[in-house]
Length: 368
Image (tube, rainbow, N blue to C red; front, side):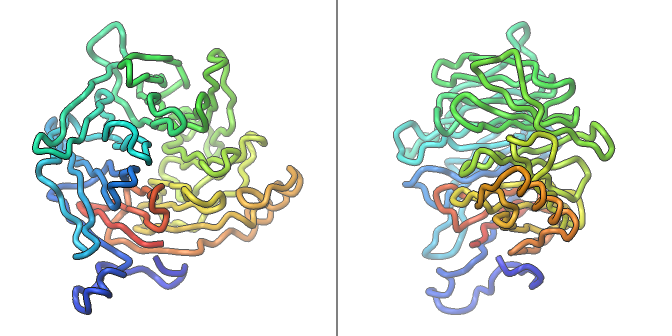
């Protein structure tokens, strides 16, 4: 990525020495279909591996597992690890198992939560489980998203258009807990610890739940301009769980929140020129966040000046910093311009120098 204001680039020139290609900062993969769901592998033994999924308006869709060969600079799809998927996945995520202690699993959400096992031998990918959260019917409300609990990888939380969040024990293939989380569709869910998760909804609220007290939730933020505008995505800062970020439907700003001071954003990031579609906190730094949207821009921000993610500070200091930022506006430190609207963004937790974006039928991985 380049410094903000310098504009972005496309694919690197193929010319030059092999050594130069190795040091390339952008790698591109072109899929035979529009990409929506996309994520990095977490295992240490599978560097530069990602899953991508199609967005096709039909029942049969596809998932591919692709890998960058850093000796050639090519991202390749392994046909043995490509498979059909019913409906377009709304999210794909590898098991958070850096040390390779568990089977090599991939989860996807669509009509149901599906768990897939990736085999290194010729058998390829096998479906291990199809999990339906509706106990009274074989049908269920479509799943908008899910999150895999890093601290306790047997737990996966899903969010649904039927207003519920469901916590699964995937080892037992059973529901641990199901909550009516919101008044309208739940659009996203994120874990903030072993038993704490948050969700965002079409009702315009961010709510935090503690599994030790399932009857109550804490409203951290409600959209106000206009009231009840749907919130689409939620990112919880893994390095400093006091902070989370959310995006508002059809809105170019990103709202950063401190859960200790509900309702008052720490800062609103307002340099996108069109709706924001995706957010990702840095996996290795408490004060950096990447955002991407319909203006074809991926922007990285340093929030350390906010008295927040990198500096602590009292409530009064934070409010003053937030007020200053609101007046003058915070600028991103890095910017990249893609070839079309960016719909998906993921920051690699095992290789924090790399961010992946998806736009149209292209996957790009960018060195930051």
